[in-house]
Length: 292
Image (cartoon, rainbow, N blue to C red; front, side, top):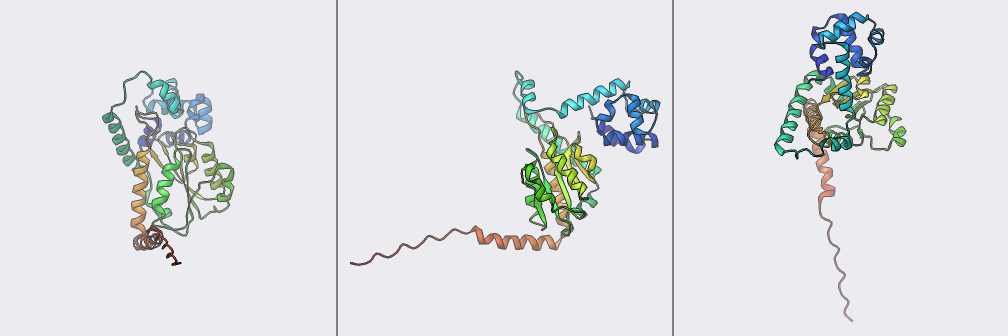
């Protein structure tokens, strides 16, 4: 079943002005707004209780209770952990390689489709502008995707930094962030408070935030100028973020294209400098034996 966020994105063009107000409020405070009472949700969205009920019916839910049941199911998906999945999978037949492969291929296809929701021209313009300091940060698992993206981008542009400090030392990199900076933050379900806090601090310093997250949306998405979303569910103890990597590689390809000769010149310069460190260290000559 599609997530409610999926439905909102798909139906947004056909919504009335009031329905769009409700949808935007739900997306801003997802899923907490929809888990409130009808009256509280209506007050938050600046509309009436009947409008909320008509909106829920338009999303094909038979009642507000059914709507909230779906939201709770999505919350339980967000809170999944390897330990909870281990318990759920115990006693089941082993995962066949073809089923995992099918899930991975499906996630990649869906990730490519979701790129249509991103203003890629605007993102590329930000990432390709070397006058803008570019920062990347990820959490316990998402740091791997941040590192991969950083390693490719640093070959085609300068003025880039991977935030690798422990949370206690975040202050040092934050001091370098200002209104010209761009932060790409990676955060997938079981969202990390320190990544959310870092993104919020960067926004307070007026940086432009690009969020890279799953379809349930990390809280960083609410603060972001641009949001990349990808499916992560897989028949495994761990989520699969391969779709996110495909999205980032698409971004990198577009950025390299935008930089053109500047990217080629930087790659050539990087290769020249790498030559300094790629050769074998010559063996020391043994001292000649003295004749006695």
